[in-house]
Length: 334
Image (cartoon, rainbow, N blue to C red; front, side):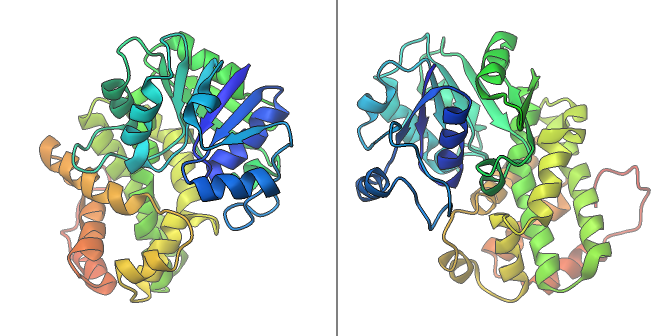
């Protein structure tokens, strides 16, 4: 089938390559016309994803109408804060038979909406919408390294359709009807990964990082359950699986951002040194606002926000976490 990929970051390029291997006819829409011209000419972006080459017969274009024309499905992989504006541009070129799957992870700043909610609010109400999430670094997917993800939708038929489109012998896709849990897992793990990176920057060792990841998972689960997610989802690929890889991998932008913060860099200087976007910084603020609305205590997310936006040092934030009252492990807060 023809599948249009909206977004030519590392994940967009990797999934375009993957869809071509899976026997589909992907097209790739590029937001930046200069980048589009470079991709058309060279068929790769060595800065974002070295070694990933696009086949000569894959249409790469800055023209959205051209990229979507004749498509049966659309994959949205733009930065989370650009999902709404991209969907608005795409809307006039979409009909209700075209399924839309979001591979971006995050929460919209300001509204605190999940990205499927942004799509549902922007597109016509009858559009089939799904999300694709799980432990899946672009750097490994394009190399055909074994990867497992989750296709989630409130409509089982849409989840199964996306599963069939993306599934391959190295890219295993499971389905889920817990759209809330799968999306929140993919968004919140980026915030916890910043905290995990801070422990790396402070040189705190494996014990501290393991504790941070474990208690971070409790925090994600508690907030997710309060927002209508199935707690069991957070023990799966879109929760624990994605959390582990994002908190520990050298490919993780959010972990790297945290490491820089732990070493004393400001948010502005840390982001300025990074080539790709760390979604967790924007999501942290939205996640804390959601937690306040739901009256859920989220100490790790709270401290990450203090480091990111209030000028609190990483050491100070750590001290604040460790000085909390002792409690039972069954208590879901830190």
